[in-house]
Length: 267
Ligand code: IPD
Ligand code: CA
Ligand code: CA
Image 1 (cartoon, rainbow, N blue to C red):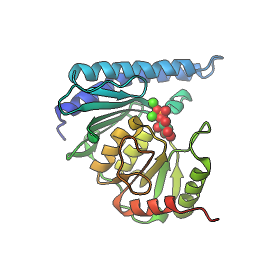
Image 2: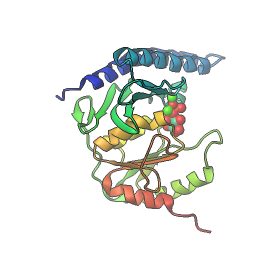
Image 3: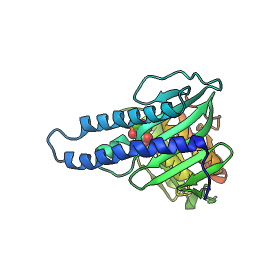
Image 4: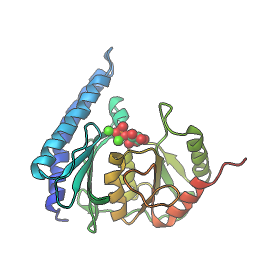
């Protein structure tokens, strides 16, 4: 069994604590589905509560580290190395709201653009994905590797579909068309942090999405890299937390998926 570093222990403990509240609230959502008001307000409170628990736990353990969190203002790092937590307290909110048991807490530790440690925890399936720079990726203490598939025709890919009029729908439909035509299938699960964790676990061979936020990708990015996969922007440029697109896959398929996504629509 792998021995976790002190940092990963801090992160997993915080995730487990916030997850207890989320699980309780998820049970309540199932009751609220049938109520007239619906669960929407309740869910936004669940989100905020989880973020508060994570902020308290992480800042208690590492008082100087900064924060970049989805639901609150950034906190500047006072750490000499500039370390900060990049946190999504609930990734997969829409799933949570609809009673779909597929969501996660995502915590990344970053310093000056570099990811140092990552935790993505799925409380419903009790799956704890962790990675630390140079030390590999683990799922509940089992070492993970990206898949070794190298044929598009045998591979499946996860993606995110633009919604509420956001993003470029034409561009997405074109990309989907390309990947649909060549691969064994495309999945849309609704939680980007878990999509990346699944690439790291070799459950899916690649993932692409445009318009992600830093907290959607921070932890998952390191999970994939430490499991031997490649992560970049679509088009091959290096990824950074402000990137407008993300493409992750095993080494054999990364270039091919990128080529498909970049292929121009026929005039
Ligand atoms: C969303 C999920 C989803 C992705 C969206 C994200 P949220 O995060 O990761 O899979 O397609 O782009 O905004 O809102 O559930 O934290
Ligand atoms: Ca998210
Ligand atoms: Ca979120």
